[in-house]
Length: 195
Image (cartoon, rainbow, N blue to C red; front, side, top):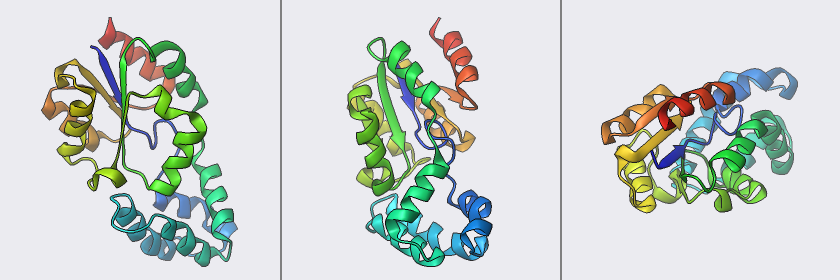
């Protein structure tokens, strides 16, 4: 194996589900979680494939909870968290030894600041985003785009995602796959496939 391709949401950060965000924060934000999810999920799904400006997600969500868009964004960023142990592992143990790719279904105004802050463009050889591509996983074309940009054979790739349904297209292309649970189990699974 020469190439390792990661998902982002739920792998590098702890949580990404809009529905779970509302369910877990509804009480403190004073909002009906079902209503908030119904309004904002549709915006998220359109924004993640570049059909609408992703800033609309923050402004419309903020209106629901009577906050500024910036304050709501901070609240969401804090909720989603960051998996520092995985980031350190990739930086110290994988970078420079393997080609690294990322394929992510996120909205631009959420992912791009993280890419900048964490220096992910320097860490990963290729980052494929749903908002730039105009399609989202599990569309097989997203995985094919990563393989093409990395200029590798899918059979030389390991794909890592926290959703099982996102592993199937990678397997169809011939990649080895790992269902992400946590950093410790990922290290064990990678060791098996890389040894």
